[in-house]
Structures are given as structure tokens and as C-alpha cells.
Image 1 (tube, helix red, strand yellow):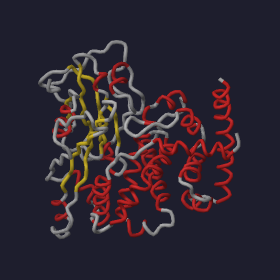
Image 2 (cartoon, rainbow over the protein chains, first blue to last red):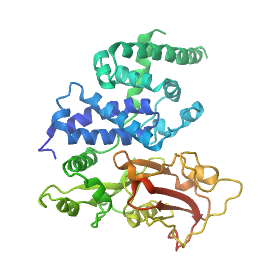
Image 3 (cartoon, rainbow over the protein chains, first blue to last red):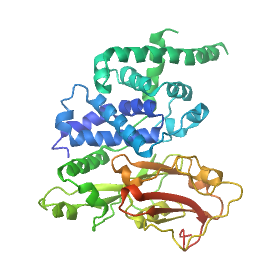
Image 4 (cartoon, rainbow over the protein chains, first blue to last red):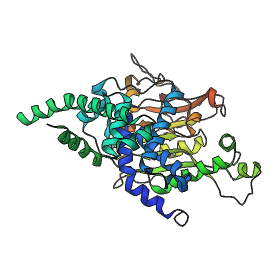
Length: 170
Length: 232
């Protein structure tokens, strides 16, 4: 394998964790995210000559993983219930036994965002894509990215800042 | 707190999750994806492939101590279907993991289904990982298994719903149907063997028509552990 695509393994090592994190905060479940990201990386390997020339291959992986998640949801015709925020916070898969743990309060706050806002946050803040590339990856207008990000930041601030301030006071 | 501080706090979370899938497993799966693109209908053929081999990544009964996770997987060797599709037999061999069993650091067992093949291998692997289980992919339950008596709670799962009663502790994750359809996006469930009630085991079986993706379900229930049913 190495002789054919020597740089795929390096690419995988460099971005796998940030891709996983971006998908975790988008789908809210670590194990599901790992399956989706693994599948997306496999597809990236299968199309590596093209994907390696993509301006943002990590974004390609995340987008492919999210698309696979949507396909899964459509097949199941139901979504994993995340309405119960306590359940989200307690859900071990949100962090996970083997792969570390996302702060449950941050995870719960992210899960309260609409799915598209979570995706924008994942790509803009966690993958460090600029607005243009985020827009391309999600197939939406750059202005829409900015609008989603603005709303998401406002909601996260309202959600998290009081908690953190309370913590600091105590 | 301004936006920059909030963003910094959010970004600090980036290092909290780690992708544990080995790159070799990704590439193996990538080969299967690529081969499937080259061979129209190969995915469908794989389900009915006559030649099914078991590829065990680690020896059975692997010790979990000291290892954050270990995986076993089953592979469908599609060389036969590859040739049958008119492609040269000298083409790359295709290996698809039909299922993967991973012991997690907390002692639970994750089963990822891509294809309902090699039930004996799955049963053997799960039993080696300490799960008293019967696995059948014949469309019927194991006649040697008897339901585990549960009073006042739900012994069998409702698709998409959290399990109730002891089953909810043993399988704390949502359980998904139609594993055949999960070929490209595998379905996973987590089994917590330590939560099994005394004298209980698990039965995993298919219903519907094996090979017919739209009429095919994977089911699970608590059963009375016995040598004939769960091996112990």
C-alpha cells in the first residue's frame, strides 16, 4: 500500500483526529462518528489521486462522512434521539472510552444547535476552514455560512458563558 | 467573555477525541470501495459469495489488559465473484470486513455490522470476549435458546428505541435494523457483558430473507444461558 500512495498514511495521521472531532460535534455520537469518518477516509483512499488534489482534503473527508451520516439517517428514517440533553451529556459515545472525552457541557451546547450550524462550527472553528471553503464544502453561500456561524456563536455564548462564570465565582 | 475567548475554549476540545482506527484497516476498506466501483454489482455479489473466509486480525481470546482496544473482524473473500464478473482472476483480491468486534477500554464490546455473514465466527469471537451468545444468520432463532424470564420490563428491543429492563444495561446503544443496508455505513452496537443478569446470555439472529437487503433484520434478545444455546 505504501508504495502506491505513500502520502495517504501521512495525511491520515495528520488530520484523522480533527476530522473525527468535527464529525463528533456534528453527529453527537463518537462511535457513529468514528464509523463515518473511517468510511470517509476509506473512500478518500479509493479516490486518493483526486482527493489529494482537493484544496481542502480534510474538509472532503468531513463532508463525505456527514453525507454518509445523512444517508444512514435516510435509510433508518429516524434520527438518533438527542433531544434529551442530559442524555447527550451522559452519553459515553459523545466522548468515548477509547478516544477521550469532549466536555459534556460543550457537547450538550453544540447539540442544541441546529444541524447546519453545528456543521458550520465544525468546519470553520474546528477544521479552521475559511468561509469560502466552508461554503464550498457544505454547498451553501458564503453569506449563509457567516449567518449560521453568527447565530451559532450567539447561542453558544448564551449557553456556556453563564456556566463558566458561575464556575469561576464558586 | 468575548468571541475570541469562546472560540479558544471550544477549540481546546479538539484534542479530546482520538481516531483509533488503524490506517491499515482504512486502506483495506478503501481497497474494497475501489474494487466495488470497478466491478458493477460486486457488493451484491459479495453477500451471496460462496467462498467466505474468516480473517482474524488478532488471535482468539486476546488479552484486553494493557490494550485500549483490540479488534477481530470477518472478511468476505470476493475473488470468486470478481472472476465471475468477468474480470481477470489476477486482479486485486478484495477483502471486506463483514463485522468487527472491538473490546473497548471500559470492558464493553462494540460490534460493527457491515454484512450478516459468518455467524459462527462472530459467535466464536464474542464468546472469546466473554459474551455468552448465540448467533444465527439463517432467518431463524436458535431452537436451543429459551427466552430469559424478565418481569415488568422489556426483554426484547424496539427498533430505534432505548432498551428497557436488563437489556437496556447490556446494550445501552440504539440498535439498528437492516444491517445489509449498512454496507457502506456500518452499524454498530455496544454490548456490556458485565451487565448481563446471572444466568442470562444474548441471542443475535436475523429475520426476514438473508440476502434481501430490504427484507432483512437483525434482532437481539436475552436468553437463558446454556451450553446448547450460548456455549456456557
